[in-house]
Image (cartoon, rainbow, N blue to C red; front, side, top):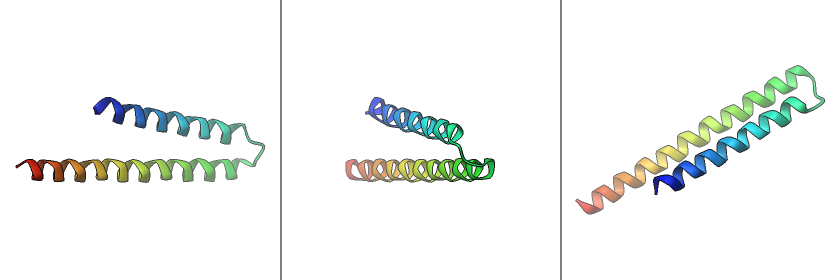
Length: 67
């Protein structure tokens, strides 16, 4: 199970790196690039927070069911 979780986060992080690379390669002004990078990073942080939070809640409920 941990390998599936690691695979998910690895693919998610690779997608994030590709998004940042695409923002860098765009023909937009530097301020728009900075805003895009900030919003992308903020979204990744929020997504990871909720993903890990949901994982902890599920583990808690599974342990509670077992005990």
